[in-house]
Length: 297
Figure: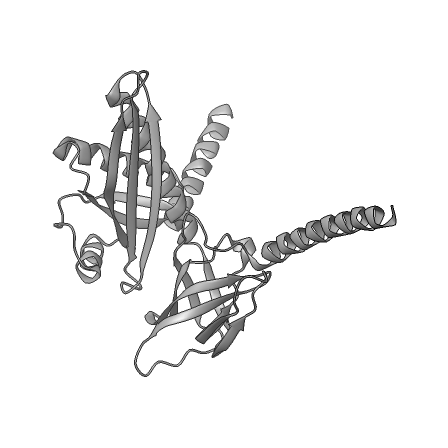
């Protein structure tokens, strides 16, 4: 009896694990290019191993190691071709943008900046891009480097798992838009072609995020989010494919999110401006009261 229960439990775990793996996005990891010039092939391999491990740890991606399968850098079509050959949903590759080693009187500090790009076979025209920084310190420089790489790789994996899940829709077709300034020193912003989309501040997007608009498996437009509100966001269109017509309901994908937004979401902007005006008005009343008191004397 106990044996039957154990076998049934083991089978259930196997079925659940298999179902979960089938829901993952299968990607080929194509390797790392290094612009830092730090330490050659061993260093690139270390970065690649960390990213591959971090991606597999997200429970979003199922990663196949395909390093040396293609010479990097490569264009989207070549990358998509590798994914097709390996029968994966897409392919990802990374770049070491910079690496610095600071050696103060105490432990060495290593800082690394990584970038990664994911191409999905379904829409090879669209590149999902992320960037992360990692820092590590340790008496041994090698260990400090390992810590920095692992932190940056973990952030890369987390960002990719979040960005690939962000999907929205076009709410309003292209139109001319004016964004009124929230601060009296700023100017109103005028945009010739914009669309309003369903992704909003609760989605985690920021001003400066880049988007792609899709109809089926084709990208028909690209743009940048210029205002984030509650319930929707405004996108300034940068490029619309010849002959394409953007319609309500077209799919929207976020392709990159900046580390630091140029502007806060609209509700927070308004709240801060209200508090600033309230603060300035309070000081004005206080100074006026003092002036009246002095005149009265």
